[in-house]
View 1 (cartoon, helix red, strand yellow):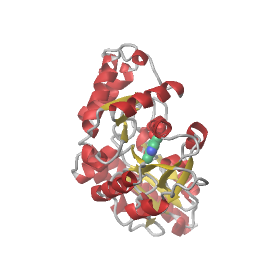
View 2 (cartoon, rainbow, N blue to C red):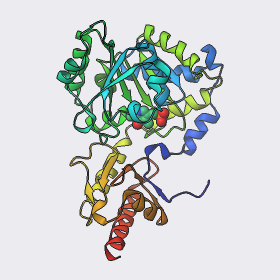
View 3 (cartoon, protein in one colour):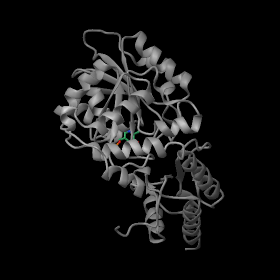
View 4 (cartoon, rainbow, N blue to C red):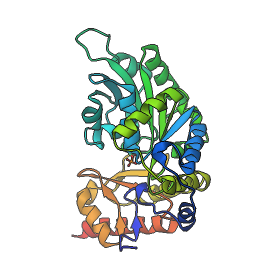
Length: 351
Ligand SMILES: *Cc1c(COP(=O)(O)O)cnc(C)c1O
């Protein structure tokens, strides 16, 4: 293994496949995925379709491709997607919706990455011949830049109803949906019930190395499959990586509660540090955003000093940092990371 930071809270994408996960991968049954002949991929897709309460599912190489393939399948060029201004697709997909689907994005504000049915109703265009066509509402659950917040199911249902009333399709970016499930005790299918398409990421807190699974109706998945091929996402003996996803769904879901407890622990330990301010009152899942400007350091400076102490936490702006807990950092690691942050803040105050 290469030498990295001792404690890596940069993202839950930093998880590495465990030994038993690797063993499951090594012994996976495989076939030609592109021809629909890989038994492990088929098992994984059936598991996720069932989990999300949908008819069918599609294995894709990344969560980003889940969003982009879904957007392409739901829309025509010139259409408009309504989504939160902090959405992953707005900031971290290299303009994919415009480049790959030719669509416009209509962004909505709202606390913690969440918006309301009333906002959707007023954002839907009226069908005038000179207006782009509102076609899709896309939500993120949990919210990422929104701080790992869990959408209340009644708000998700209301947003989906508002979309459907106006003939719009609905999509859920569920990169961290299983964190919402574990935090709330509500089943994944309940969160996804109003949504025509929904996906989960295997390579975040679930701890698999690669992949996302997009679910929806049989017709939607048939259409999405065309764009999976067109975007170059069809694979061959992908059972090797699907096996990691199957392992993750069987073994790594309920343990997300530990990540949530560690996030709370970290927030509790850093809240009293002079110069540190938590960005949100409630830590609902595995993310902690905090402002370091009171220490006199910028966030990138604090990140660099933490790294010298073996702790990696990302700077998301000049003032703010984001720590994300996951299965490769335990309670002791989180405590050590908080101590390192306290030491960095104290050293800055002395200088
Ligand atoms: C990480 C993430 C994605 C993209 O997933 P990748 O597997 O990294 O491509 C999409 N949406 C959200 C909310 C994410 O956090």
